[in-house]
Image (cartoon, rainbow, N blue to C red; front, side, top):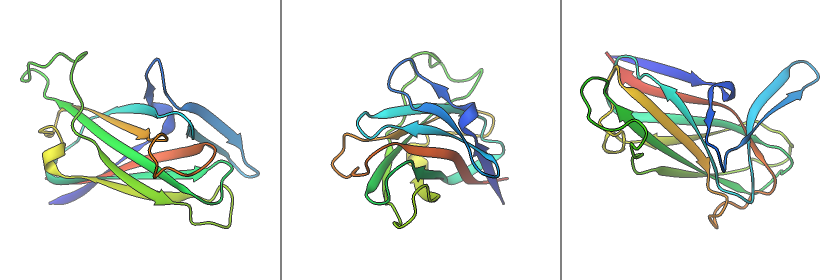
Length: 169
């Protein structure tokens, strides 16, 4: 068994036509920082498409790497959903396929420094992976549930990457 990691950059996200995070790029003092800015007042979501190369079984760990644009305290609530279709086998319509039940995680700002990089891990158990298998076409949806009472962070939260980890053959 091997451990596989998949890196999802903000540039590869597929926004829907409404309620999506804005793509942003800041010119830092040494390098540019790109990300997806999730709003504090509106539930926003985006989707990445991927292939789970050599996935065999077990949990899918989703690391959300983010920073608060202006806040130095508060909590953010992330939600992760997944949909999988096996090409040539499944009979689902690709345009009406439903997402699995989502998993949420709430993370608090570590305080002190503005724009401090954080990592929140959301774990999807096999029962919520929509029968994902190696070679599937998979859509992973990430959202900030700003309307939930546990999301208390003001201002945008900028996601710089999403990292998936799973066990494969």
